[in-house]
Length: 237
Image (cartoon, rainbow, N blue to C red; front, side, top):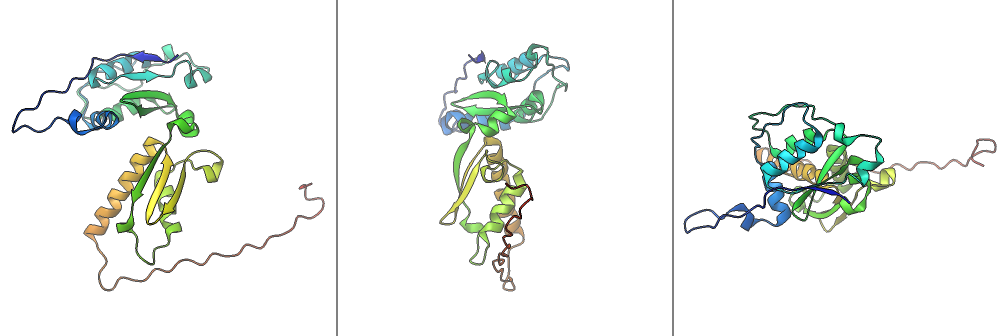
């Protein structure tokens, strides 16, 4: 079973007239965790702290439960996880909690927000196992024009986030169009990148909008690739 790193129970302060509604009453449990991860984290984690202890410190500071899949996906690695240490030293940092968590986890591990807690697994598991992928629909009608080549638009989304896609490698996320909306089934990390891509596109479009001289973009004609039958002795049979 996965070992749980317990944190203090998060309690939402009672609001009074004239005060802003606390985040916990605005967001779902997952959105509240995402909100906490976006905030600067004041924490001290000396270099050399074990991974387990570092996650405990972050869990207590965030008041969010962190569940690590020690006996699941992590067990597939020939690694003594109790001996793994944090490479960076954090003290009086103003870096976001999400960035600190990513640096502590390193290049092999990744976190996923699930039901109001943080679940830590391997990068491979997070990209290949369907249970870690989320389905979201993006309304991008304001970014499209009548002449827009949707295939090129989709290529931009794929290129900008460098994600793993099922139709390219046989596993990973999926994406398709529906009436001017982009339906994406991908990891939370990729969805965060897609959100940033669309924010940047909208900001750039607002700053430099097309004027009357806007050119007309035509859909690129697809080239027909001739099919060559294999010759005997080519090693196909």
